[in-house]
Amino acid sequence: MARNLVRFDPFAELDRLQRDFFEDGMLASRRTKLPTTDIYTKDDKELIVEVHLPDFDENDISVNIDEGALVIQAEKHEKEEDKDKKYVVRESSQSFYRRIALPQQSDQAKIAATFDKGVLRVDVPFAALPAPTKIPITAGTKA
Image 1 (tube, rainbow, N blue to C red):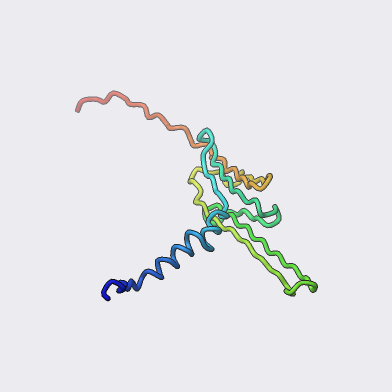
Image 2 (cartoon, one colour; image 1 turned 120 degrees about the vertical axis):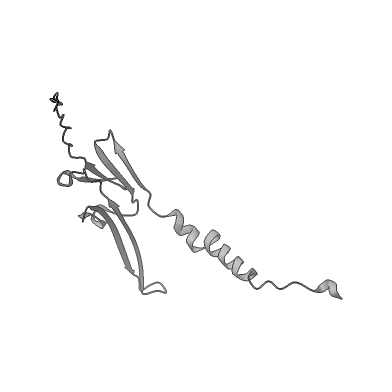
């Protein structure tokens, strides 16, 4: 009779729900759709920021400078009305936000952004740093 006893695990169902939700469920599919952002320097003369936004149009994207940071935002809303189907209104929304601290030597007046084939590229040139000043050393007199 003791062979039929099963040990009760109060967390077994929570573990299964977590696995379903994060590995196979909603967040797993959402994780693969997040835009990729590449940030790198080119020849130590400029910072390049590339954001892959394939689901957005140029009009959906804004690039701003705010308190020494580059702010990239993309927002897209779609609304479809169809009286022939069982739904009256179908809406979807996507958004992206990224704030990147700019280096101190960046030349904010010369920042340029381009959008081509779903990739936003922001070029942040660096301002020329002043050359170091050499201080001559003179021979001192003995006191």
